[in-house]
Length: 322
Image (cartoon, rainbow, N blue to C red; front, side):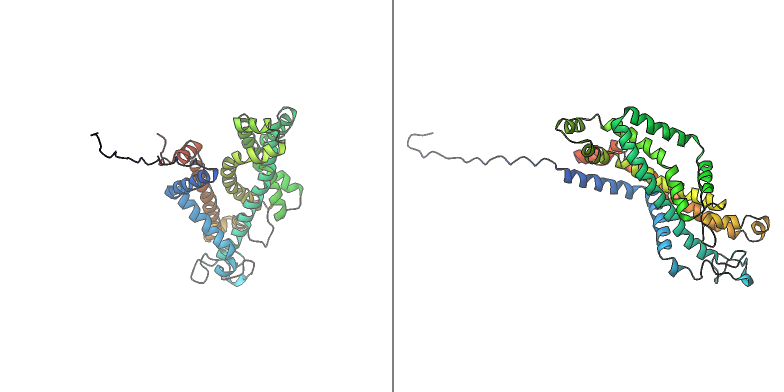
């Protein structure tokens, strides 16, 4: 710089502040967004969701979509072919098959939801206690689960349903009680892994109570497999209710039930002359089971932690395994 020249002052801007660390809410939102994208891109999820949604709408709107009463008997119009008057024909008592299928959806869906709620309540609670405490508590609960799983499910359902008066509440309790063992084993396996992680050990070191650790740290980490098992369990409960009603141990007449409708049409004469009395209820059972199974399979893939947590934490695009 020359002598007597005015010095030049240069100003340097401060560096930008570092980005804020990701918060728990932001990571949760990223996980939900990624989950929704995966489900929306999965054809199984779309088909299963559409099927389940249609069944729920039919069950809720049954008084509006059914043109006849499901229990009204018309002996003069028995075994009529499907027509514009009776969309799916009539059965041997002249009852409208479409109306009985629509109202039967209420029974099947309610059995699936309520029985799985009972299985979840028992299985999740016993699985958390068994996996967390271990020792003799774990041995006692798991041996009881082994005894339950040792019997064929259908035979155990028949034995329990036959021991009580057949009714809708009996079906709820029977299917729910029989289904707890599988749920408990799933939850126990997840708890055995999660309880060894650092955040659980840190909570224990800070003096957290067992109840707080189980409810706030262990339970949220077993939700994903529980949701998948419950979704698939609804399909199994619908099949179980249909089997019990077919054997006369489920919902009693004149309440419409898909399994009872097939039982009423199982004689050889109706199978030859009026196949619609058994085909349409069978298709309804198949559609309901297929819808929940497709939805459960799609949820199992979408909730896979190998994709979900890594992509949510890094903000990376979704990838599929090879």
